[in-house]
Length: 187
Image (cartoon, rainbow, N blue to C red; front, side):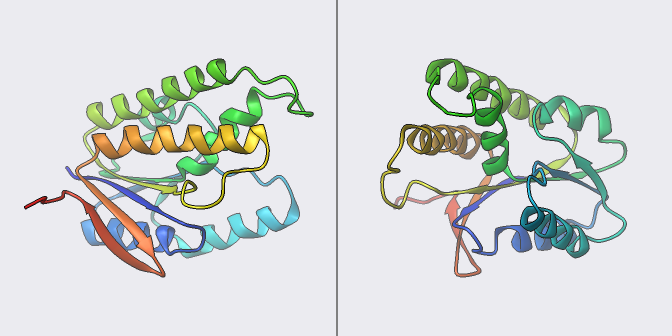
């Protein structure tokens, strides 16, 4: 089993590369989608992603608790594609912030995120399948102008670090090209 993290900016080719890797593994696939259609444009994006997936892949649409949901739905799948951690972190943040974002308990939200990511890591360790996990790198740009934006960036960075430490391979997507990050050779 091989576990892979694909990280990069928006529209860098992460999902396409994840699909290609899953197809190359040639095993039954469970696709885990974490997006919610909050508006018409997002609904169209989700439908586009659905059309791009092979028809024989199983799909699990879930916004949180993905580790336990994967264990329940894995069936005969030998490859799990999680697309994406970026939206998973957003879902957790939105669950625990009020609409005005004035009352934010950052340590509580971070605790909930760590629980979620650790449950995913446990799932990876327990399920007999390869995992391909998609996420965004949001820490390369400007510091967000508001508290919620900074918290989101920090939470996603923490999740990405935990996952990168746990997987066998990490690829950074740049302009549609996968750049291998892990394993690394320093000398």
